Length: 178
Image 1: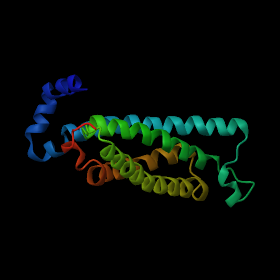
Image 2: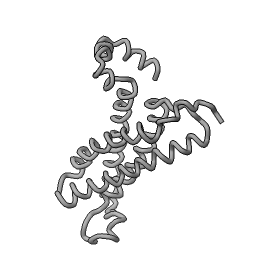
Image 3: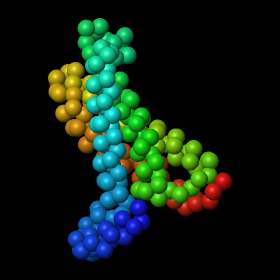
Image 4: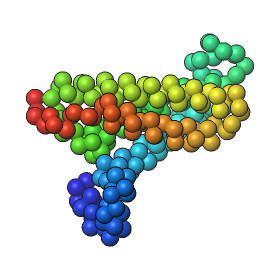
């Protein structure tokens, strides 16, 4: 990843953007890496949502949440959303830890704290994600995939804020291995 970043830093456009005091806040290594891996994490989320949704449709699964709602409704998209969240958050944790926020610590206590706070903050955005999906699909009757794309924009912004402020804030100083 350092070789790729070296090429980015040599790019004339990047250097010109970085010379501007305001733009250098936006176009820094952390933000660019977050956006890059955020796009990949979003692809994992949307791709796995599509796969799970397609699978559930093929097998006739109406969703675990049918027990809470009407039996004639299809709530499998909520199950697909939760499973896609698990895939995306796992991928996101690894890439954010190693490449975005450069948390090199392997100490069990540090990693455990990072995992707990990362998944905890992502659980908050899962609730927002699922609530918005329900609102858009079941109440406003949006197309499931269109709703997923709109909701992901909100989730990406919230995830960055949570990671920056709560998850990887101190871990870069702790590079000792256990």
